[in-house]
Image (cartoon, rainbow, N blue to C red; front, top):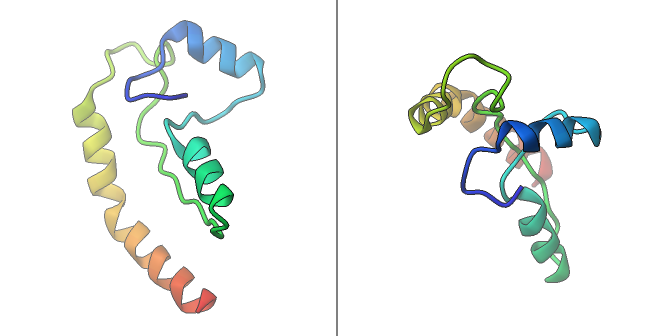
Length: 87
């Protein structure tokens, strides 16, 4: 999905019917652009909130930011391990 917005419940249902399990805003276009420039790509994504229509409450940007803060330490350690092994 292109974002930057939450998917609607209808979009979530469509994506599920198409076989999707996790939705991201911009990873695919960014990877396509990087590959067109000859770059090697490694992607790490964080699923930061449930999809619209899957929970009985409104989705908020604050929820996404909190998930990012909560995962920051683990993602930092993972990135360090990956860099050590790749280089």
